[in-house]
Length: 323
Image 1 (cartoon, helix red, strand yellow):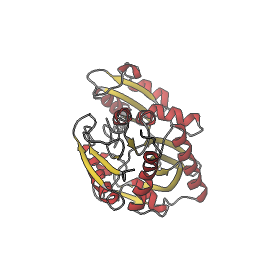
Image 2 (cartoon, helix red, strand yellow; image 1 turned 90 degrees about the horizontal axis):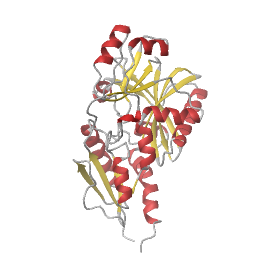
Image 3 (tube, helix red, strand yellow; image 1 turned 90 degrees about the vertical axis):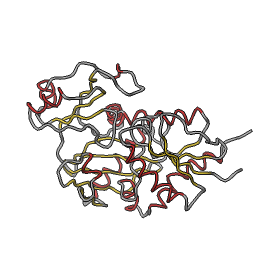
């Protein structure tokens, strides 16, 4: 058969477009050392032209809407294009933070309580607005449900901490609720602890990375401002805690039907108590991103990591029967 060609998709139409362009450029540069590789800047919610089902293996670095939510994956499936990473169903599931937590909890992974709701209005989403109750909770309702005035508000189906709000008291919570943009939202009690991230490759957890934002909040600015966050890889944890977090990451990965790779994030309150935050199926892919940090703990440099990320999809292409 013709030698596989890796087609890296980057950019996209979400609020994380610029982040995706960086991930795509870094990944394409590394992949070009291993296979014939091209980089496509995706500028519309549509399948790029010129993909060859017999040759192309897509490596997507699209983040957010039409990247991680299964939209692009569904189009690739319909066109018979082989791609690396999670399939459309698991991508859609993990993009929904509440659904991810339900699936992980059923597998024995600890999750925080939450309240999911929809702020009505125009929502740029392919999902029906009926996915969550339209009634917006009051500050008093959330405080009563969670037992604290410190509540986290964030979009239920976005990444990179887009729209994250962390009100500190009842008044600030009421103001934040009134200011929410149309969309699907999730509210949770604010858990204060150590933020951890674990890369999962082929169902096996790699190193645990600790995230220490200098501001105390790992928001969009802390993620993408140079020097704003300290990363410890591997995280300085007791061996028992490291092992428990890695096992939980593998359970969450399997429970959500993930394939090939993902990044699983937790918050640790004590060595024996930690909670799942979310699963990211198309995580940042610069050399300094969390998934590559986790991989380096397991002895994989960036080029070795992208080889392992794409190789299962290359094998799937080579095993496909073509008439």
